[in-house]
Image 1: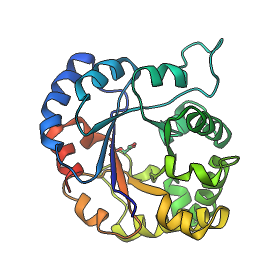
Image 2: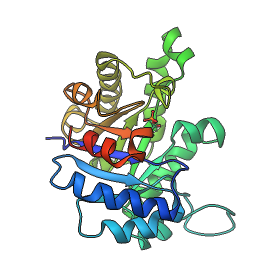
Image 3: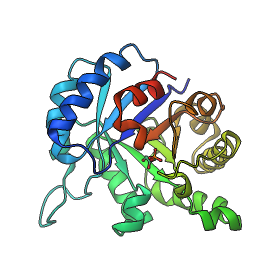
Image 4: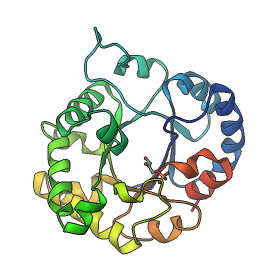
Length: 249
Ligand code: 13P
């Protein structure tokens, strides 16, 4: 019912030249995958990536978008700019943006609303720090992040957004949440969505990914968990062979 969805988040990696090499390798490897396959690339690579993946089963994503239509926002990129290049998905509120670039639950909400209004699909990231995990505060924090991200978003839009649960302590560390931890935490987020919208919306419409050191070795076990609908992949998305193995888990 919920189609698996694997997205690569290249972060600040790959020049245009690197993009050409990586995608040329990746395209044949992911052909025929059952999971929806997305690459979220730096702004400067979007045009090149879009041209290269045209006619393939790889979809195009960006790593952020501003909420305003246009204007005096130096360094920002608008939804129309992304749409013109064929972008379909946009990562919103990644923990690196929250930690290093002042992203808040409120700006995550504004960006997500703009995405949906414009026909872009936000991949909304939520996740707790190690301290929040260890203190047990993570449940309340994830529920609050989820609720605040979704303020003003109508039930009819839930099929057009994706949530990515990314525990900060598992990102780029090689430490993965256990299958059970990832599953149970995603269930907390899904239950929150059920209470905000409806049980059916949560169970049958909204897809929730796990992110944090997902790789060819652990992907099958994570994806076998009932709550986990996909992955948001950092490091392992930078290597065509590794990423294709994750996509074709
Ligand atoms: P890693 O897969 O490198 O841990 O990164 C996860 C991530 O932050 C994806 O958005």
